[in-house]
Length: 522
Image (cartoon, rainbow, N blue to C red; front, side, top):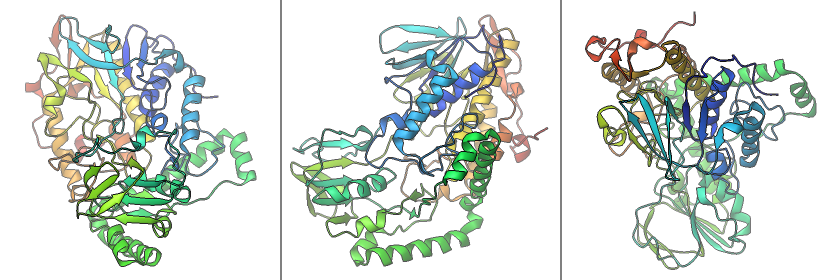
């Protein structure tokens, strides 16, 4: 059902390692396979594909982007059970795509990558595995994602709690919450799904947060039987449905611009009104109302969050956790909260890109040391000093207004074009020029400065030093235009026999402009 005819032989002489088999890893693998690459291996530490959708199986887990666009454009599913797909259904979708596109046979499950080291003698990458063995490949595609490593809070007494305690991404289904006093720490994307899902079966539910989030209503529209039948029978209608939904969401990206302040203020007023009408209790209203700009961090979707907080057995604490004790927690303002179970909805180490994998490039450069003040990459894909290494969902390629899957498909195409260039050159490697990375960063940070992402607000879009390392500031279509071609002039070309081609001293030195990056469609 999925995929298209292969272009045989395009990259049979090139070996590629892909790390991770979530949406990003599968996008890269499928793109290579569809274009004739045969010597690629996907290394997956778990026992199945899926990434975050495999790991985050907590109660209520679902997508906050419509499933029709949170899916591959070449593998459209006509029968989603809801507008926003549930975790199990998304996981099943990814397993089916991996199976029906044929990339499943390229995946090595239960194989963790611990290091990737560039060998300047051979011009290849040594991929070290958790098994103690290693493989040599011509290129590496890192697809570990931004939300793959759970983050625990740094609070006193973390190990002193006597009852069950677990992170939302490591949900323990053996723990029966019925009739228990449950403490949920955090009020982000996971918490607003978990809290309504478990509220009616627990005796007491305490939500402890450091800061509230903006939560807006979520459409529950579903296709009727006639519409579903049309989508199931017509590939053209499935594509049209996908494209129309994509364009509808694409129209939202100007809202992150500072120029859209009046629209944001109106939206903030409206949702503050909903909070007051739903919660009524002044203390709960204060704790649930954000004091920062809407859209400067992740916008959450839920119809049940505020009604659940209004229930008599649910309490919201707004000062965060100061200490964990054997039978509960102490809040930062000194209140004791009793609990039988603690669920940590404290997010992920999103700004620690590619950790904990050791990545060493040319001249022994350690990528994580280079990124100690904030990750950066050209188009979120390439880093100078790391030849033939590409990233999926890398720095500054996250989105708040549309589906990340569209960007992943564009990134996969860019990686494929780069590797085709290597094949046409007869082998060797392409390494991004340092000046090109610096110019792109100057341009990118300038664009980010025109958005609300640089405002001071809680969340993971910025690192500890306040640098925006996660978000893309423009439209998805703009990103597609910028990645439509692999521009070899921005890279140094080399082989194991020595480098040749444009060097860093020959790179452009003029200040960056929009014309440098936004290319024409034709």
